[in-house]
Image (cartoon, rainbow, N blue to C red; front, side, top):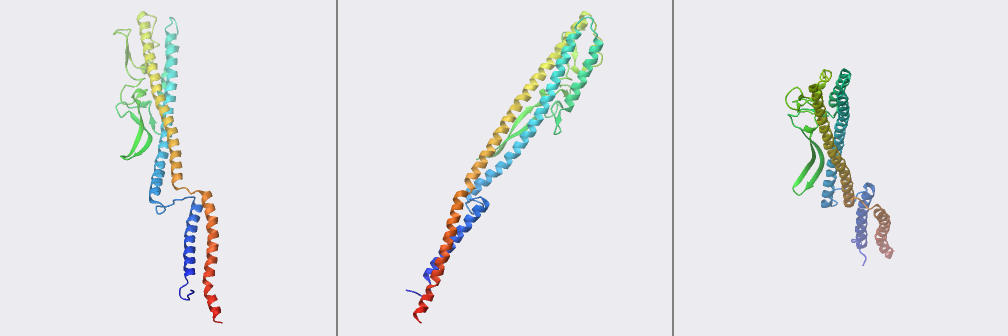
Length: 310
C-alpha cells in the first residue's frame, strides 16, 4: 500500500542515511586526527589509561633531564678528582726525589707550591649548576640526590633517587678541616720525625727547610706517606663517583626505553588503524551515495500515485 501521509520507505532510507553520516563523521575524525579514541566520550576507560600513561611519560621526560644534569655534575666531579689525583701523584714523585741527599729542595718547594695552588684552584673550579662536590662544607648535608625514576603503583607515585655522600670526595672543606687536602694527618711517633699537618701545609717552606739529617729525612718519608694516603683517598673517591656515574647512565637508558614502551602502549590504545579507516571511509562514501539515491527513489513514489489520477 502506498500512503501520501506516511512514506515508510523514505523514513527507512533517511534513518539509514543518518546512520551512515554519523559513521562517516566518526571515520573522518579518525582519519584527520589519527586517533581512534580522541576524547573520553569515545571510550572512557581506554582514554583514562592513555591520558595517565601520557602524563607519566611527561614526568619521565623530566627525570631524563634530571639524570642528564646529574651525570654532568658527576662528570665534573670525576674530572676534578682525576686532575687532583694526577697532581698528588706528581707531588709524591717530587717528594721522593727530594729524599735524595744533596738535592736542591728549594726548587722542589717551588714546584710543590705550584701543585698545591693548582689542586685548590681545580677543586674550587669543579662547579656545574652551582654544585661543587670537591669544595664543600662537610658539616652540612653531604647527601646529594639525583632524581632517577618516576614510579606509579596502586599505592600511589614514588620518586627514586641515586644518593651520593660527597663527604669522601671533598678536597677542600669550607666548613671544617676534613677535606682530603686540608685535614690534619698524623704520621709517625711524636717527635721531630712526626708529620702532623695537612697536605696544604706543604706549601711555603716545609720541604725547603728539610736537611739531610736523619730526623729530617724521616720526617720527609712520613710526609710522603701522608701524600700517598691522600692519593689513595682520591682514588677511592673516583671509584665512588664512577659507580654512581655508571648507575646514572644505566638509569638514563632504562628511562628512555620505558618512555618508548609507554608511547607504544598509548598508541595501541588510542591510535587509529589508518589502512582500516581509509578503506572504511571509501566504503561509507559509497554507501552515502547509494543511500541518497534510495531516498530519492522513495520520495518519488508519491509522484507515481499521482500518475494514476491522470
